Image (cartoon, rainbow, N blue to C red; front, top):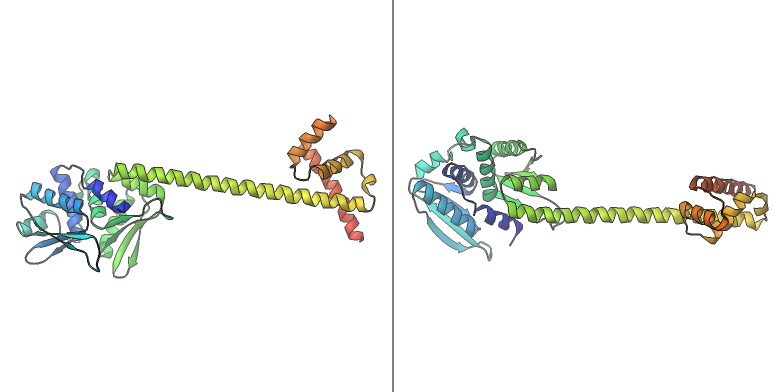
Length: 304
């Protein structure tokens, strides 16, 4: 079962007051119903959603839509559930604001009803990637540009940073940021799905941070080794012409210990020299001595 189906199953089991159910039904039928002269036909592949729509219509309007179940197209293993609403058709169209491009204000009369309406939009035409996949993505597919902008504006009332693009002859409202997708799941009260989503997101963020730290640490190790190798080459060049005696004693000690501990960082080497000679030296002091070695090696190379 996809993560989208898991979310919709959870949402379809939430209990609603009558006015809340009207807002949710308005969004579901707006995006998932075909209206003709005879009936309102609602189609879904989710059995839990089909049951939820049936029960809502029965509770609010005291009707029992006809339900037809059939196999999906293209040899799909999924079943398709079709609800046909013939009784009180005109009342339902008017009541659920299905005869307007944008729902009437009473459908989204307050913050709670707005959230429930957006929940209905997700149930009808929304999808969300499983957070275990490589990218975070939540989307809604709707028919008109005007309605897409309306939904986008409602989502962005909650700072979800949604955007709209045209896809073929339809319009997609989408959210890409993991944190914003989590906020949406929280907003529509998909708590179990939210907990799963956040667990995976936190795990992925921690894993990515660990990888970045490991890469950074490896880069630092590589840099330390590269610097040490350059210092050893400078020392060996000076030795090859008998020039080590040209260095003062402190610099000579640094050269001897660098050749002895070729992979040590400056911090580690300064601690070793301090411990073995009894003469304290800091990282910056050691760096200054290697600068003198480098300068001498550069002069020798220039003369060659």
